[in-house]
Amino acid sequence: MEKTVVQSFLYPAFLCPPPTMNFSDQFAFRPTGSTTAAIINLLHIIANMLLSNPYVIVISLDFSKAFDMVRHSALLDKLNHLDIPDTVYNWMVDVLSDRSHCTIYGGQTSSQKSITAGIIQGSGIEPVAYMVTAGDLKLITVDNKLIKFADDTYLIIPASNCLTRSAEVDNIEHWAQINNLNLTETSLKKSSSWTTGENGMHCFLFQFQALFESQLSKFWA
Image 1 (cartoon, rainbow, N blue to C red):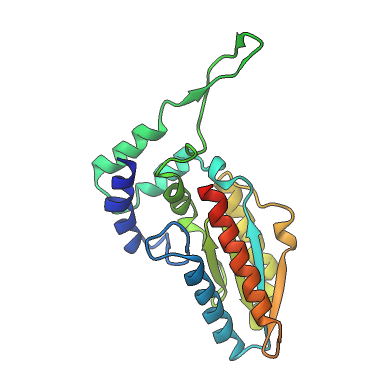
Image 2: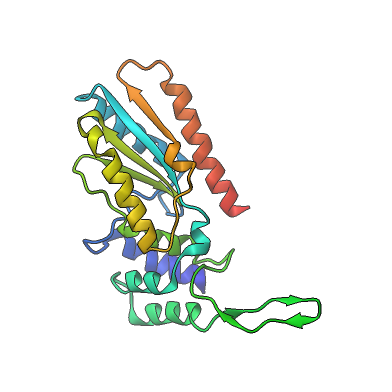
């Protein structure tokens, strides 16, 4: 049932999203997405920027336990803006509603606590749930670009916009707080620069490929 909902209704809805959302920059968990597509897009963006800029900044951002932190209310609000049948939306509401958990230890059972965030691990809707959540993550400066691969996000800034770096990261952090997500401290320190004369481009390409494939294998493990 979950796969039918995702493949027959959610994936088609991603092709014509509302103005507030964008799925074309997400390269994981899509029928046409892959590590190869992500790398090709990354190279295409950087190469075009280097035509008119002496260097390009790439910042790697990672959200801590992103799939576990997806807030149900925010997810449902975003799903409500997609072009999906009411029956599919109501099914999603039913899947996410009235869930609770308790702890059993030493022969004692705790009281029930409601679950208001996170998607069941291994569920068919888990990947697209995060895709929808991240669908409205956008940049604030023209000509800056985003590439998303699952919960890894790459911020690409041409030299002409280098002074916007802090504002863009602050914008992403603000979006994360609104959506119950947290950027890892180490991710804020990961940045690289590409220049028109850099000989290490192929090495850097393989680093990104390893990151993408590691993220994909981690999810499906």
